[in-house]
Length: 340
Image (cartoon, rainbow, N blue to C red; front, side, top):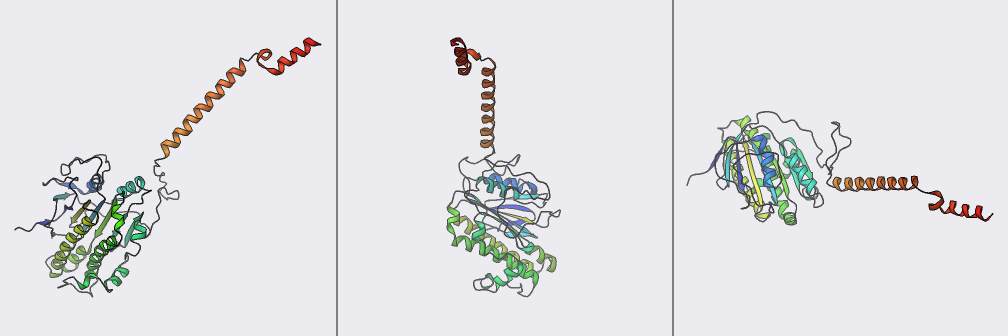
């Protein structure tokens, strides 16, 4: 049987439930549209995405989770078990920040898991239940390397072959593999996360292959061994996540040789507390939309209209009042005068 390989810039759907219908074909998708695609698979509306690769699904079903893994420096990955694969055009950097904010604002009371992680940049962003579940997840390279030396690390089970434990680039790649392993291990320990009603969002960016290709070259045994390891690890990671979420999770892998433009983004603290509005923002940004706004607005509006009408009616009646007939004070005064 022919081995399916992902070449160059591409978007590969490793797992998806039946009600999220991806069509097989060679329809290219732009890198900047990937966040819109993720939002659509989660049942959220987007402004415009005219792409035939994803068909409209049922209105009342949404996957319990969406996991997007970005692999930088990947020339070809063997991913035989996949739903569909599409070429990626205009491979510009992108983030799922808007999707994460939508999930958090719509399901704030259910505290969904929102996890965005880039081990090479030591960048971590968590919201909701992720703060408690992934609190012990190693984030900095120093923490991850320490995790590699502990019991149960991936070093004991991986065929390292030409990869070395003493090379910085090799350790970066192995640390990213360790993070994938630890995420599934934590989810298995906290299975209740996959059973709630709020969708979860995971975004992982791996750049270990890019560092290996830069140091050794793409024809080196180190790069080829790392590619084989990552292919099998991604396949197993997708299967584990899909199973943990009751066969109701979408797992995508975006492979890029290199991004066409550097990504400029605002840095975040490692354990950022949930904040919808940020009054102290240096960018003078407006408050985030609150879904109670319409209720409060209607209460205030109609109360003001009722009070204004009451004032008008009272003023009209006072103006047209007959003091001798309508007022008890004037009526008693008139009777006293007549008696005298």
